[in-house]
Image 1 (cartoon, rainbow, N blue to C red):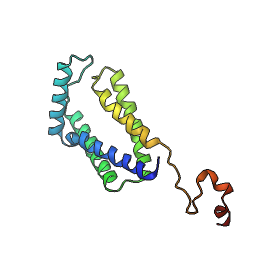
Image 2 (image 1 turned 90 degrees about the vertical axis):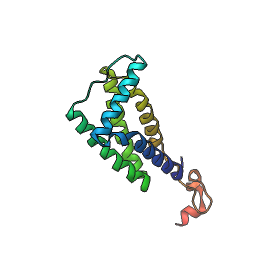
Image 3 (image 1 turned 30 degrees about the vertical axis):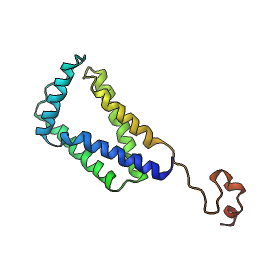
Length: 151
């Protein structure tokens, strides 16, 4: 993957985070989101549970939402390879916690979010292809490239 394509993935993952995370930014929007998720969980007849949140859940969820919004905003504004690699670490951690929560009996609705964490994590873990040298030699040909030996 080229750096240009990689940065598109970084920005796309940040836009996804903004869209999915904005309801977590305040205790009121988080309460509404959790109520909607609980209703969907019940309508679909899914196993597991979505517990009723208390004030501490709402505080911690809103803290998480606020931090993710700032982090995503930075990646939209100034995507970079470094930010993409750092975001990969957060995605791996959060994916682990989502899978752990699902294994503990929380709603399988979490697995929909886990899918996107894994998708963007794989994209952001992808190795970058080095650009061709100005002489026209490819990276594979650098040891044999006369222009490379002169530098």
